[in-house]
Every structure is written in C-alpha cells, then in structure tokens.
Length: 355
Image (tube, rainbow, N blue to C red; front, side, top):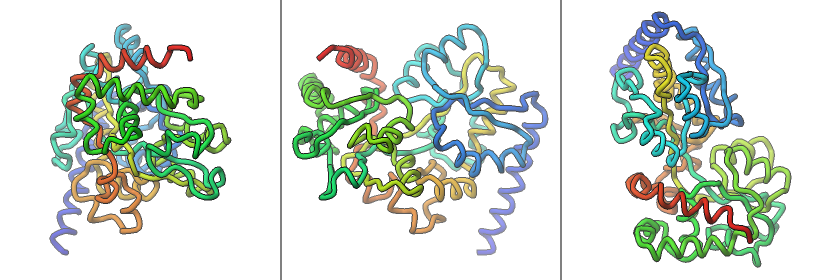
C-alpha cells in the first residue's frame, strides 16, 4: 500500500513538471478541439479540461463538425483552425493516405507507457472506447422492444421509424447479424464478395424504415427523445447520460459494435502547437482523471490498470466489460484498412439510390 502511494506521488510530481515545462514554453494559450462531442463536452471539461487548465493555464474550445473535407481544405490552405481533430475510422484511413495528419509525439502523449502500442498509431491516438448499440424509449414498447439485431430489423413485430449512423463501418456488420450471422463471424463473411452482397441485400429491407442516417453522436439521442424514431443505433455513453437525466431508455450491448475514437493533429499546424496538443491527448490517460470521467460517462480509455480502480457499480456499464464483449463484435482495423475505400464507394451509391 505504501509503495503504491509513493509511486502515485512520484507520478503526480513528474506529470506536473512535464505539463508545466511544455505548456509554459510554447505560444499556444488556447487549444481548439474539433469533435462532435457537444453533448459530452461538459463532462469532458469536468473530468479533463478543468484539472488540465489548472496544471497548465491552457484554455480549450470545442469546434463542431469534424470531417475529412473540412480537414483537407484547412490543410491545403496551410491553416490551423483547430489543433486536434476526432476522426471516424474511415476518415482517419483516408486522412493518413492523403497526408493530412502529422506524426504524434508519444514521448509527451504517453511518456510513462500507460497505453499499449496497438492504440498509438503514428498519426492517430486511440483515446476512447465506446459501443454503438440498439436503444429505444421504454414507453414505445410496453411489452419489451428489440433486444438483438434481428429484432431491430423486424419492423412488423417492432414497428416504427429507425435511424442508423451514416457509415459503412458497422452497418454491414449489423446487417449480417440481422441475417443470422454470429457476431464472432461477421468479418469472415464480409471478406467474401457474396458476404458483402448479403449485407447490402439485408440493408435493402430496412432502408424504407430509416428516416435519417446520423452523422453526429447527439442526433440519435435527440431523435429518441423527441419521438422521431422508435428504435435507434446510438452510442452507449450518450445513452447512459440521458438515461441518468431521467429519460426512460432501454439499451443493450447484444449485437453491438465495440469501436474506438481517434484523436489526430492536422499536418498544417505548427510543431509548437502540436506539442501543446499532445498535452491534451495525454490528459486522456491520466488515471485519476480517467476514473472521474468513467463516473460521468461509462466509456473507458486505454490506460492500463484503470479497471482495478473502478467501483463495481460501473463495470456492467462498460462496453469492454467481459460479458458485454462476448455479445458484440469489435471493429476489425485490419479488415477496414484493406477494404474501406471500395466498400465506402458502394455504401455511398447504395445510400443515394432512390427507392
């Protein structure tokens, strides 16, 4: 116990020294974070930004609507309108290919190696895990609503409009689950041309019932709240937050998609500002801050050892809880790195074909 306290004390001292030595020598006083986490920004501020600001004097501002087009236009103009951008896996793959991102300085971001190397890609820091899951308002289905992806597709038994994310990643896998493929086998099936056709054919069945393909994680929450959809695919952290606020929401990890979020630094930003941006990225693996974050939003970072420090009250809410892992598929990075471009083109054509 004494050794643990001593190591923690040393850790805090070292962290403070690094934060101060970098932040005070650079000219950037405010970081602009390009993310769609408007709904969770208050929680991010409480868990990460307030203590980071106290340590460094830095200020932070959220810039909404992160997307590849805006990033590419900014980089091509040599501007730095935001210092950090959160990208979906597909946009991240394309951004790397187009050389829109600079290499991340992990000697700052993870100076004490709390995060496994698999989460530290040269141009993207995998900073947060989350799941996209089935959700509905309990009042819509008094006798119980959809509990798996086959149910989500069953608009006869569970009628009403649906919403899906506007992304090929995840939706092809959901379609295969709805068609009877086990979550552990979706990528084996998708690796074949017949599997891809099978997924799009299944999506054809649901398309007339989809009233919107969402692009911001707050949208499905809003649509559920306002009754614009009866069932949605939404992110677990946002769902738990609105549930705690009083909305009677049911959601299940069954047939969900365990995914992760990436932070990157635009290629057009200066090296000085990139060093300061790295301080922000580092905040997401500070153990004491992560624990406070999970109490607010049940999405874990990839900081090692955190699970042991968390109360059992939170364990069942985490996407990467052992029981929840067993009933989901995890986004396969290798598959999508190899197949995103061609499948995304097919998705775009499918999306905009009139009924």
